[in-house]
Length: 489
Figure 1 (tube, rainbow, N blue to C red):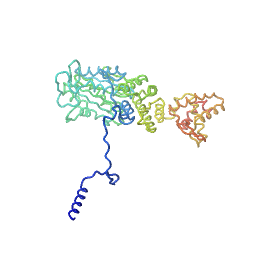
Figure 2: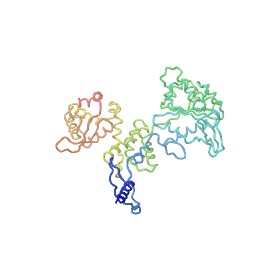
Figure 3: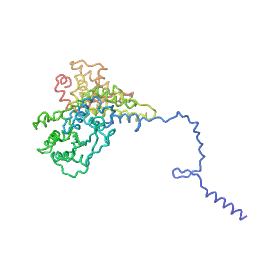
């Protein structure tokens, strides 16, 4: 009897010591669950694949914004020139070949408004035309003690050693330190003291088998330094003179936005014409050029076009008429894509495969927010008489109805027609013409349009409008025109 009890106890203890499958959830231990059924892989159709999300780093929106980044790679052909910049590319390449192939130096002055491709074109040439190794030719070596050295192919299988220094003058506080900056970019040890053009000349002459190319970007910032140094501009003049000395293999590429900098500063030297640098001008992009560049970038990658061509053409026309800055166009288009992204996320269209395209209305909204940063006077100067009358009626109504800052489009049109009928000065526009004027005013950034629900018993969606101008500045501008002053006074 005792032996049977001992045997039963041993069996019970052995069962408790066996490992059991348990599931922990919120700190509780549950009894073992039924084993999951094995999935038959063969029964799963091969055509089933997860839906592509419209958001995230791999979405069509993110890929398109990456193509429109200012630092995005440029698709080029056999020659390393930017779209519409073949003429400028040819001139820069001719300058480089002439300097590297000869025993003397030269200088060139590249100018043009911001965002016209000056720095981008020079960087592209350096990246594509200068090689780390002399490929296809004999195994060449650079002179000892130099850094930032490359090989440049002057003719078929003929390479020459070139040292390149690219300096942004915005980061230089003291113009006198420019010689030390150049020397430090070239010398691998930089043990010497280089403080003048004469010191730099000695260093260059000590390496007769190397051509030295210096790129000074934003050079006008250095010349127009606010430092009270009478010799501030003289150091830049010395660099231009150094590039013209015989037997000195030194090429100077200066880049600046100021169109007349050469006349204002370099003319002080009273140099002969042959001593002045050659000027290469980058004109502002036209609307058609901007449109072609954007379409080329977006279609070259084979992606789906998420921006309507009409919206791109509208944005290009606005940017070309303002500054001709291609970078501003990229910024506007990227911001327009982000507007669509936020709206799609809000409407929860992120996983149903629906891709909302950027329309002209989205681009106009972004332009409106951009232009809000400018003064009321500058924005009003772009409006015609009918647009000023519509805007004036909104401002006039808001002055007398201070408790309602915005009104529906119907109320705005009624107030506009009554105001003009009272003055008997000019006939009011038709309703559809009035609505078109309001959309144009939003594009100019002087009104704000928004959707909302009406205030009556039947709550339905309506479009509201309110002015977006400084009232004092607006009154000053109205006082300059007798007709507007008579109607809105």
